[in-house]
Length: 383
Ligand code: ADP
Picture 1 (tube, helix red, strand yellow):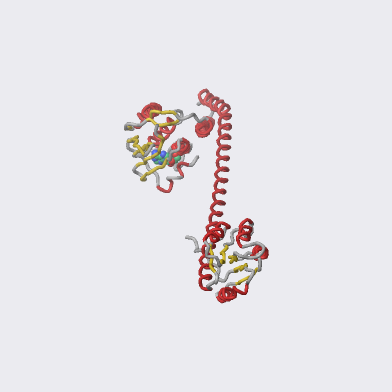
Picture 2 (cartoon, protein in one colour; picture 1 turned 60 degrees about the horizontal axis):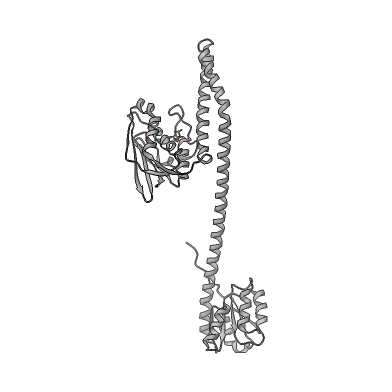
């Protein structure tokens, strides 16, 4: 996936030693391998050069007059500009305490004097590779952090705009209800009282207006229901889904009888849920199962089975079905697959279902075969 960490071919190595003559073998060796070797003769000079040149690695002598190697290393590690540069100690000492002191000061390794050119080079290369890897990791990490922060920002903005939309939808639909009710009832009065008393055109026009007002009422009611999922949410309590489905079926009794639908309901569990929202969820799914029927009597099943600590419900029908490319789209508000003349509706029902299920920490999805039927499956938390 990612490009391998690049080891700089011929990086810059800063050598800090008060007796650089001893180091000729090493510098020659490094330069032959394409490295640029810079020499500083004291700890102070080493720090200055490191800050200025920003070498890829520092070879640091332990015993120097003035600042010794340990203190030099500590200061390099204390500065933002040089702390990431790997430091290798050069020591004549075989004493373990000194080596440990070197590591404690922030060194990554040590080499012992008299230096062996090939060994020094091998260590330098392995630390440069490690350093490059570390830098790459740090860059990837920073990139990831940036992405996470960006996503969090987007999520927050989305949340804000959702809440604003909900509030707007609530206020607008709530305040529109009353004048709309007035328009609808006076139009109905007009149509009842003057039907056949004006000319045919007038009857037709009033009919359109009544129909428009009814559609607008359905839309406003659904929009209000949609916005209420967020704005009028009730706390969760153990809720018996058998009772909920029974009530939903009673609400739909006329439609069920009209089309001769057979509804089979399995044993349903008690879930942790909002008792005002769950009936809406089942009612919307059941009414769609009845509405989007073929020319045979609808057969509808409601089932539930445990899924971890949650319950997975399925509402299946033998209706017209949905093409796979619309499986996601139908849950978006106002998205409908059919004209109003064929199937009445506002395109809000499934958006409400999705919102209710997600508020309960669950997920909803559809599986369907066009012309054969659909199954809407969703999860709700157990008690
Ligand atoms: P509405 O029912 O008001 O059209 P919904 O949001 O409930 O809006 O459904 C969106 C669309 O998904 C419907 O218009 C229909 O095309 C499709 N749909 C929903 N339920 C079913 C179903 N059981 N069988 C076939 N199509 C369905």
